[in-house]
Image 1 (tube, rainbow, N blue to C red):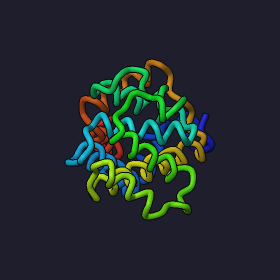
Image 2 (image 1 turned 135 degrees about the horizontal axis):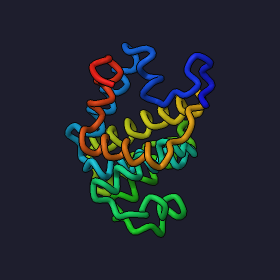
Image 3 (image 1 turned 45 degrees about the horizontal axis):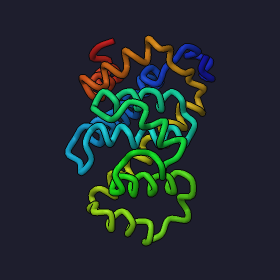
Image 4 (image 1 turned 90 degrees about the horizontal axis):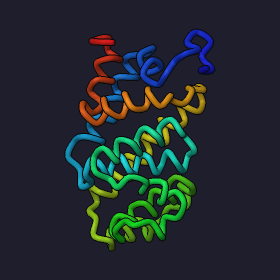
Length: 184
């Protein structure tokens, strides 16, 4: 049950629809960042989103984006391994550098230094990749805070399955259309 007294059964899409001007911008940003051109594959972006959500203890986003990452070809169970031990998880050293960066950004953002950025560059990533990693970390931290702060309940297994399928197939465009009242 959400903390919104006028929307006790609200999920995130319903909350975003209550103020469509804000909600549509939020969902459009997700669509562009998560499905537009990027140095990261769609699966890698979803894996970063799940990782950040796991760090922030947001089960709603963690489960959803881990499922989407797997639907895009990320090895099943990898996100759990990353959460347990980033250094031992079976990812490339290049990608591990990005995950180390977003881990520190999530946990100690005020302590970020040029050295942290350089570790991403030294692993072979571009300034665009650094920007995308920061943007994914930021937008999913915002999502995690909205969900936690508004008391949006976790998803049932069936809801999770439907949402993972929809977001994998259609991206975030259906969320934008829902927020704008173009379909339910």
